Image 1: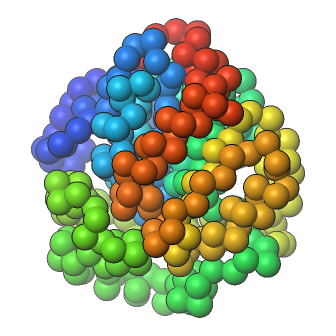
Image 2: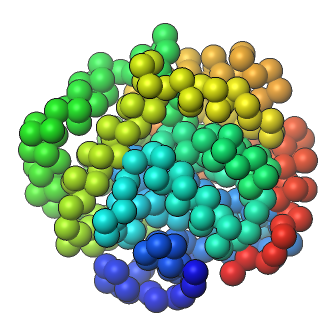
Length: 324
């Protein structure tokens, strides 16, 4: 396994307002952003959601690096990490996440996951408890239950589940100009997209432009979406539920109250089931608080690291080896 600074490899030049673009070979090239931070600080690995990327953390990462060492990988089939024959399912990307942790920062780490990234973070904590010191779950994708998504989101996942229709819809989406793609996504995920910093929006647009040259991008996303639904579903989600019950590390739950993709009721239910977990709810915020209200989200994380997450911060600062 090797790491490199091949800026511009696998998709053109990188223009990062924050975060050093790097690559690691983990059974194929995996792109990640190294946001820096103190070498002896707790390591945070930020895990994006379905259809997201490492740049989803560009607004909040600089607010954490005064205390934490922050890395953000692009999962297979996402961001600048092309699948190149690798699976993009939840199970496969959980293994990729584990191998990234071992190859780049070393364990244990604090995993900070948004949406599908929260799902992957919980699965990693259950499967490899020695690798995870704590969890920050930002509007995480939990097992389906009484709190159902917005009807539009339910319809969207129904489209993903229909192969021909799903490919057609994804093809139409990809045909849109990159700025329109990003604007549509922010309208879905944010209550007020204008809150997202302009330079961070520009990073997302540049990435969307790069991804237009990736073969099989729609196929990879459809496979990932179907896997998320299956993992969270009632019929096949038993192992996910058991895994969540096995988590013993400190957990911070962050949720935007007006999230249309994952209802806030899901995080509230998790907090009731796990009284030791800390819940912070932001009113008038959507699915991506780390983009829409990065300062408030960072403040909540810092408060947690100094209180109920203190043991996680201490454990993640005592790594077996220094980060690459």
